[in-house]
Length: 68
Image (cartoon, rainbow, N blue to C red; front, top):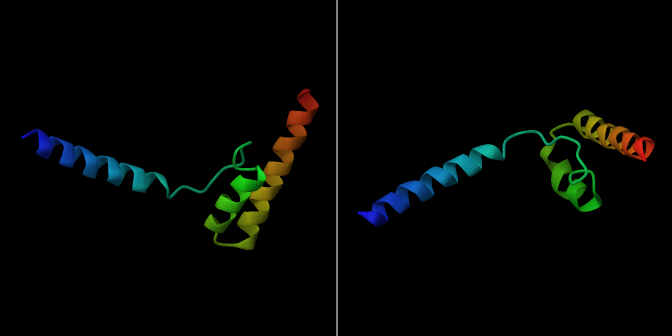
């Protein structure tokens, strides 16, 4: 009986995690780092979307330096 509960839980969690990966990434300190950019940029389907993301990273970088 316990094995069935864990199987259902594992399948449900897997479905939930797979569903989370479909969103378009937003500019953040993690996504705008060089390693983050390597992972994020292939998710965009057009060059305009990529450029908008890069512009968002640049804008958030300017805001961070203005605060300091």
